[in-house]
Amino acid sequence: MVAPGATPLRAQLVQPNVIVSVRDQKLMLLDNGGNAAVYPVSTSKFGLGDRWGSMATPLGTLQVAQKIGDRAPTGAVFHNRRFTGEILQPNTPGRDPIITRIIWLRGLEAANAHAYYRGIYIHGTPEEKTIGRPASYGCIRMKSSDVSALYQQLPIGAIVQITPDHLPKVSRAAKGTLVSAPASAPAPTHAVFTVDSSKPGAEKASVTPLPPKTSVAPAKKSDATAWLRNARA
Image (cartoon, rainbow, N blue to C red; front, top):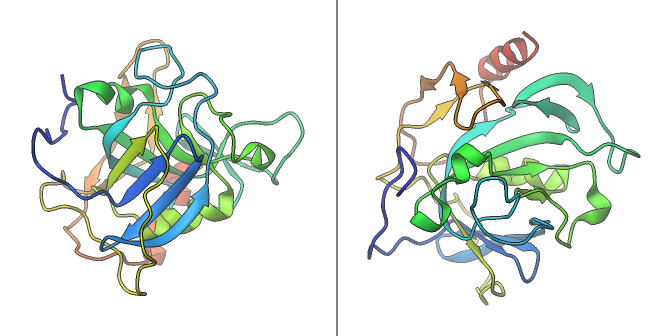
């Protein structure tokens, strides 16, 4: 079974925009096939997989389904994908929430079909001292500065490949506009979500489709103002 709204890959060849290496604990951002940037990350300390309740990181091909946190301050704390108003500094003792940005992933294969409803994200963490080794509860954790940079450069619909192997050897990309979303991607949307934690998949959202775009552009000031107003609601 493939996640709702996903595009089955079957034998279709799709070039990833991001490769996450579990072995290296690194994430590589690709620009037209070249290496645009490499960031240290943390995958799950509970291993690999996609079973409900496993808290494992799924492998395979996924897609960026939602981006949450436009213009949120660095260290902004999210609960149920809403900004709480609290801001944390890196390595705040005793605190380990999701912070700064959320890049929500949807699985495109049977092996990761539950990823979206399991809430598998690429997100910021205050536990920056653990970056570089498995430490998450299934998600892909990044330093706040790194996830903010990735968020700005990665469009909705972008392809994310999570592999147990080393990162491939890829030549450095020339500077330029990063790859845009695949033509087959679902209509881009931005939203602030709430969730009923008593049952899987009970997300509720007000989702507004955005016009298709072929390149990444900074968020408009009006969008940021609206987001912050909704996030604090």
